[in-house]
Structures are given as C-alpha cells and as structure tokens.
Length: 69
Image (cartoon, rainbow, N blue to C red):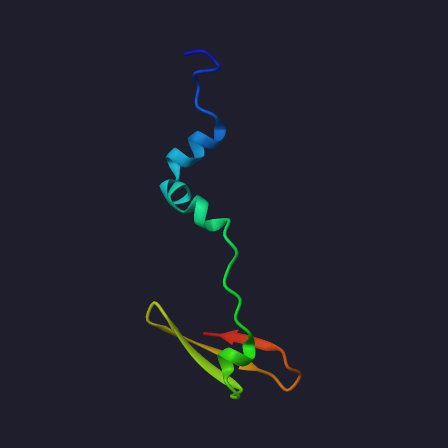
C-alpha cells in the first residue's frame, strides 16, 4: 500500500466512529433558536423531560437561566 492508497486520518476517524459519519452533515446545520420567553410562557419555571429524567429550567430574579436535574 502506498502513501496515496492509505486512508486519511479523517477516513480512519469516520470508520471508527460511524455516528460521526452518519451525523456529520447535520451537525454543521444551524441549531433552532427559541427565546426563553417563548419557552417559559410567562412562568418562572419549566419542567423538561429528557430520556425519562425531569429537568427544571428556572429564571432567577436577575433574569438568569438555571437548568437543574
């Protein structure tokens, strides 16, 4: 095998990590942006269920957001 025939580092990484290969194109797309006001809808607290776990998104008195499990 010559140097030209050898897989590049990127090819090796993608072969070893199929998830990266499968999602590589989508990973570069812009993420969806949602305002905190739209999520909270006038409330100070929002519960989010992710993979069976409940998280709490809370807006503080100083208008900071805190996400806790």
